[in-house]
Amino acid sequence: MEKLDIDANNFIKMEKKVLGYLRGKTAVKNISSAATDAYYNFDLKHGFNFSTTWKVAACKTGDLDLTVAGLVELDGKGHFTFVSYVFCISRDKCLLRKYHYDCECERGNSKPLYHLQFGGESLPEHEGYRGIDELNCWLSEPRLFYTPMSLALILEQAFLEFRDESTEKIRKDSYWKGLVTASQCEVLKPYFKRCYDKISNNERLYSECYI
Image (cartoon, rainbow, N blue to C red; front, side, top):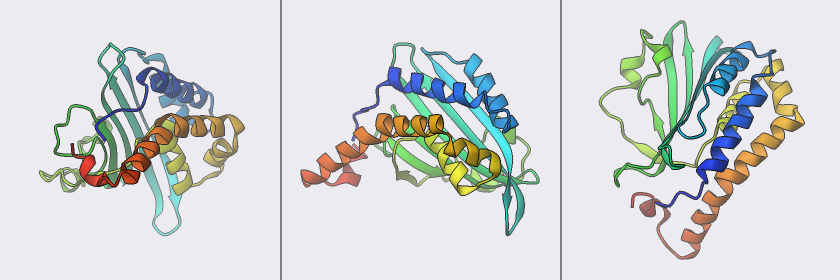
């Protein structure tokens, strides 16, 4: 599973389309503002950085702060060096959950190319938050075999997990649906095809991810 089947040029253009769409959604002010910043600082050769936090209602625990972030780094020649999407939940400046969905191209064989990590490095906006030590301790393992991620796909997960009126309008918008399905075709379709091919050839899928 060493090979990257995702075309960096197509992927980065797709992410810019997502940011372009979100920056017009003023009903979700924090998401729109962050998308605007990321859109205008976007670099087709080197990537982009996006981060936003908004309040969500959780019926059992009261309001929570949800952070979704994305970092895509390219080498200037159209190749990925590092891709990471982050999903964090906090309350009263205390981190409760934090997940990293990463693609590390220069990783050796100590972890899968695409992986999910609980904890991981802190985001700059969480400096001074309680709970960081518990979520970012010396133990960075395990990094679990996982699918590739994109900005549309991680936001779609966030919108589904924590539904509100504003984000439901985004989810039901036909243009957003098109962005999500395009992301699926770009990052998930080739990935699952390679998984299927490995299984069909009686290869050990998880073992192949560490090569």
